[in-house]
Length: 153
Image 1: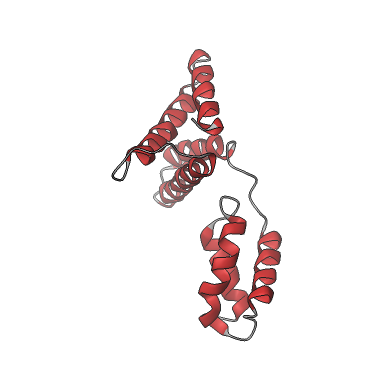
Image 2: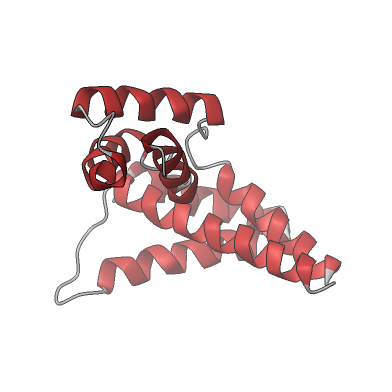
C-alpha cells in the first residue's frame, strides 16, 4: 500500500476518534475514489503515491468546481461545505505553483522545444514538455492558458 494511502487511513481513524464529521466524510470519500481507481479496468492494481495524488487532485478539482457552481446558484451553505472539503484535500497535495512559476516553466519549455515562432501548431509539443513538470502542482487549464498566451494565440 502506498504511503499516502496509509496516511489517509490513519488520518481517517484519528478524525473518527475526534468526531470531526467533515474531515471523516471527506477522507472516506477520497478513500472510496482511490479504491474505485484501483478496481477500475480489467484487473485490480495497487496505486502508487503518484496515482493517489492524481486521484486526490481530481477530487479537489471537483470540490472547487462544485463550490463555484453552488456560489453561482446562490447556495452559500453548500459552497462553504465544498470549499472546506477542498481545503482538507489540499493538505495532502503538493504546494501549487504560482502564475509566475507556471509562466517560467512554460517559457523554458517553449525555448527548449524551439517553438517560439510556430504559434498554436506547437501547442502539443510544448504541453508534452510542460505537463510532466507541473503534474499535481498546477491546474491543467491554467497551464494550457499560459502556453496559448506565450505561443501568441
